Length: 272
Image (cartoon, rainbow, N blue to C red; front, side, top):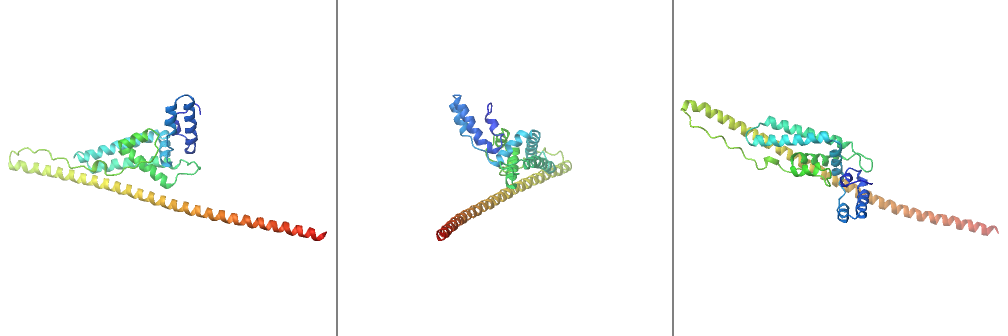
């Protein structure tokens, strides 16, 4: 335990967090650091998904760096489209790079084991994926994840840069030298404006599709949680019934044993 600090706590197996947190707080208190001890004692045990992300931060440094780079690229592509500099193809490529970076880390998370020695459930893996996606696209989420001390999973909600985006203004037009020269220039500018509008519409469609997928994931996670609660309730009821049956069977067995003893005593008495 000696030499452990707060960061080390978040790299431990999940079932070790509370006992090691208690030990570290006790150590700080003995050393006279009462404020530090109080801060450590107040640390919250991470959720399973947050714990898994913390492990990825510690063990998957290169893929994590690739994820953040892909997130930067996606945000830059979004900005370019809204400013009239980019196109839908570039945006789709950036979306796919970010998706693949998230998928790579999510696959790594599937190999992590829970405190019970079991692989993470599909629901937990989904929450890990949502947290990684949030870290790629949101500065606050990125800061929380990069520290490796995440307590709860995160989720990116909304259309990001597209939520309030408006088309970039068309460049100012020069007065044509003549009607004949102005017509090709006008057509060129109209075509450019149409291309920008099409690219921005493609971007918005991609963003709306991402939001719909996030909502579907959230709904699946909520349904899975509901099913888990129902299973837990059924298991608890079955346990109560089993305990009642056990108690009744134990009582009956004790009565039967007493009857045997009484019968044996009667036989001995009759044999005298």
